[in-house]
Length: 411
Ligand code: HEM
Image (cartoon, rainbow, N blue to C red; front, side):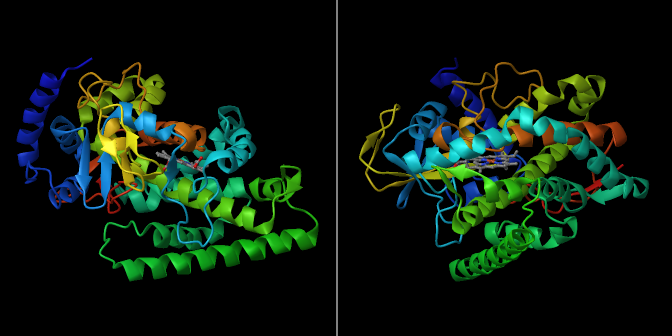
């Protein structure tokens, strides 16, 4: 356990380091935004935590500490705030709460267990290597565009049973929905229009595909085929349910692993001695992935709404109707849970990070994501053990998920 004084000491050191990034230590906006777009926003979260357990902004609050966040994530008088993702219906299961949410989690959980995803490891390894074959002789690559992004997305299309040549359409859909390229200067109207366009495209795409499968009488031995034939509450999923599940799986599955791979490669490119530790001990990859999930928190935060007046474990009161931003990034650096939270300890155990969230909406795809990340990281380092960020490039990180979308590496 670390007490408040330790947090303050950490904070003083953190502020000194942050000055190097030109970030104002007062941690108001726009400095928080500036810190979030930087390679190392971690000090900012510790700085905020040392000031207060929550941040109150206009109309919403941000929860920073692990204990409060675990409590809120399992509270029945708290509702998911990220519901529609551009559609007129809630995403399934993310946009649902209570028994409706549980119903679909019971259906989907067994499909994404560690045992069910383990056989995909060979396919991930082969694909990772094939992609590396395409650029290794060049001595450089934009690692986000040419590896981190297409790798998990292609695996996802295989799981779904969809043609790999349709990948560009899916990447465009995900980018329109998340508006999460490094350039995010879009107005609210533009954002709404982009999301509407994305939803129309994905519904059209899946409707055509599902129609074709229905007509042929062969749903296929893959995720789409399974969704067409499985039952919930004694009835087959209707078309809207299938679309609402698929839309979310695409958004949740395509960008998150891509961002995580980029964050991890960026870390090891900047810290060669840590990279050497991994080259010397490849068996450490599962542990290292957990530690970098904690330190980097590629998915930075979620949102919830308080349905009644709440008093958080820290004593802060939240009024009914308040939107709460839940900072996974901050909780994963909470000194009350993680000794030396700013140190990347590739052997860290225990490591109860919540990079995959916690409570009711805990990530459905965490086993798939973990397997992909461990296998892909191992494959990259087997083939390209020594690499660095191209000289003169300053990486800019996107919001949520956070990742450098322009990411030139050389070796
Ligand atoms: C490293 C990669 C990933 C990270 C960091 C991540 C993180 C998260 C987080 C933080 C949430 C909670 C969102 C919230 O409550 O606001 C979540 C939910 C979810 N994730 Fe992931 N995820 C990853 C990969 C995946 C993959 C590959 C899939 C595909 C199966 C997936 C499917 C989902 C779904 C369906 C939910 C909603 C769960 C629910 O509402 O019950 N995720 N994920």
